[in-house]
Structures are given as C-alpha cells and as structure tokens.
Length: 84
Length: 468
Image 1: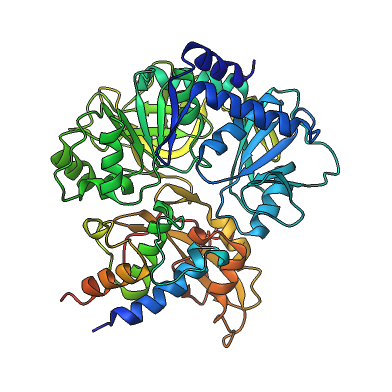
Image 2 (image 1 turned 180 degrees about the horizontal axis):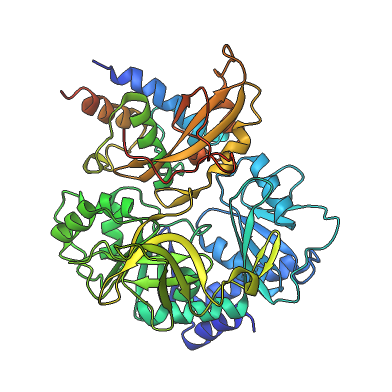
C-alpha cells in the first residue's frame, strides 16, 4: 500500500527538478496548469510515474480535478497504484 | 518574395477578423500586423544583417508567431529552439546552426531586453552564416550527433509552395477556426503559417485535460483539430456529454495512430480521426480524408502534386518510401548540402519503410533509421549516446526506443561500464544537466558488451523494441 503523502513527496521532487524552473516555487497546492504545466509536461509526468511505480495512469483519470495540483495528482496516482 | 506579404494580404482583406484567441483575448488581423511591425521596428535597431540566423526559444503564444514574422520582415532566418533545451544544448544549437542571436522569454547569460518580457542574446560568429544565396526564412534543426545537427533549410518560396500544396488537402479558409495545442517550436509552417495565409482563426489552447479543450471547441466553434494521438486519446476518454459538432476535420499527426484511439474517438464523437504524414524535408505528403475509418492505419493517398514510390519492395510490397513533390527543402544547413545533393534522382528517400495498397493508400510499417518517436518528439539515439559516453563511468552506450502503448515509444539505454565497480548513481542527474528531459532514458540496462555488426564493427541499430 503506497501512501499518497509518499507519492506527493516524490512527485514534487520530480516536478521541481524536471518540469518547472526553480523560480516557480512549487508547492503541493500550486495550480499546475496555471504554473505552465502543458501536455508534454503531462507526458513526462505520466511516464515518470509509470517508470517509478510500474503503472500507467489511464487517460480517463486525467481530469481537471486530478491535475489541480501535485497533491491531487498524487492522490489519484495512489488510488490507481493501490488498486488490485 | 517574403511570407510577411502573404500575411499582410490577409490583414488587408479582413482587418477586423480574429487571427488569434489567447487566454480568451481576441487579437484581430490588424492588431496582429501592428504587433509584427512593432517587433520588427525594435529588431531593426539591433542591426542584425539580412540572412542572419536567429534562434527563437519561446513558448506557444501570439508573441511567438509575431516574432517569427517580424524576423522575416527584417530578412533574417528563424531557427526554432525548443524551450526545454538545457543551457548546454542551447549553446550547441547556437554554434552548429551559426546563430547570430537568440530571442527568448527567459533571460539567458548575457541577454539584453528587447521588451520587458523578450530577451536577446547575441553570439559571436567567426564568419557570418553562409546561406548560399538562398532567400532563407527558416531552419529547423533535426538532432543528430552533437557534432552533426542537420538543419533543414527552407526559403520563403519553398514554404509558400508547401503551404499551398498542404492546403489543397486541408481546404482551410477564412471560415475555419483551428484549435491549436501542439508546440510551435516543432509545428509551424504547414499549420500556423497556412492558417494565417488562409485568413482562419487560431485558438491557442493551453489546456492539458479534455474538459477545457472541449469547452474551447464549443465556445469558439472550432472546425479544425490538429493534434497528436495522445491528445485525442485524452479527448476520447472524456466521460462528459460534450460533443464537437462544429469540427469538420480532426487530423492526427506526429506519430502512428493507435487503433484503440481511432476507434474510441469515433465512438465518443462520431468523427473519424484523419491520419496525416508530414515530413520536415517535404511538408505534408499525405492525408487520409478518403477512408479514415476502414483504413485508420493508412496516412492516405499522396497529395495531388506528390508522388510516392516504394524502393526495392519485398514480397509483401514493403520497402523504403521515396517521395517527390513541391516544397522540398532547399538544403541542409549544417553541413551545407544542396537540394540536388539531398535528392536521389529527384526523389527524397524518407527512411520510413512502407507499402502502397492497390488503390494507392500509403501505409507506414516501421523505420529504417533508429530515430525514436516519443509522443511526437523525435529523439536521435546518437545524440544521447554522445552525452552518455562522456560520463566517466561509461565506456560506451546504445540508445534505443521501446514500444509504449500510450506514447508510441520511450527512450532506453544499454550501457557498458568503464570498470566493474564504476559508479553510476549520479547518471540521471548528469543526464538532466546535458539533455532535455524527454530525451533522458527511462531505463538504463548495464550490459557486458554492445551488439555490433560483424562487417563494420559499428553498434547495431535497432528499430523500437517490443514492450517488456
């Protein structure tokens, strides 16, 4: 069972390192799309989650709510990763 | 001729027509033409000589398009530079493409402001770039080994010809509204330039998810969608009741269209996805408007003025695809190679393996080259290997694509360590410093040796490997 908080920490580190520039000052509540998260960012993030945790987040789960911020995305990822 | 003249004609014919919608703000053709003039005036003060090559490292925006036209207006050559390039790669591009300057939205080392949010960085060239007397407008570099980037060089006349040829298939007019979401640094000529020449309206969609994208289609009554299979996959899996009744053409480009995406999109919206084949050296070669439902895996018949032939076909009719037609690139810029030298008896040999059916529909089967296509972004193994091979713990490497059900292919690497106990803990960090993040291998496989061809001893290249 992977905790959402664990994924959130990992996801924030990834987003700060590979998606956003340091001046974005990204937090778990930052609105990702407003901060410049585009479709290539999404591709890279989904690929990172798959590489790290072994599961692809299905496109049907990529909603406004899931992409609201890193916390919401981590919660979505945790739910899918914990599905048996 | 200059492409800005064609845009000026659109602006004169319909000055109040909306050219762009950006963040819900409408920009008319007249206002857009004024923006170009204003940028051109500022750029003139920088004394860039005609024919100078200028990099444009900018996100999708009206400013991106206006800067391109402004650079054309002062007779300089535009070289798009993806915004995700790390500084080292950016400088390599500047050197290999012989850029006089780069315009960027972010400040770079030694940059000076052109406006409060546009910066110019100059580079010192030993000699001015030689465009061999061509009226060049555009150079799109294609990655190669870091020492051998090929720049596909296009003159104003060539771009005009390929835009005309492409629109014989798209049929875009002033009545069309295009919902745009692809990166302009990778897609611009047979799209944005074409739309503006035709007097259409372009909606710059920054949306990542399906819901706001569909809202934009319906709010602006979009008639044309032009996107990658990944975008259409997101739309097809949308679980709302939103429809796209105003759309007359949904073009799938950048990489092969998976059957499930084609099927689910049609099921969801009762509209077929129309596969297209665009090649940077050629423009739009084929578009499958004729039979996208039954032949979802075909890029269609060649456009009216194009001819396609299959070289040395095997017993299944599969061979290398060669194309001839209008708008073929004028040259490769680095090193310089003229059109005549690029073509083989008037044919451009694509590196794609494919076949034609009895009715002339073209099917792409695989590639002869090892280039990796990650959700539409081309990744060249040699470029990544050159970076990996410089790591002190790596003796040599081989980079290849791995088939991915959602993204086409992803990048993986085999590495041979320089010593059995060599430390590669910092390898990901090292890659991030030297490569755009989408080029970084998702997996590294440590192997004792790389496969080599028996005759030449070169590293054996492979087309994408099957999913593990």
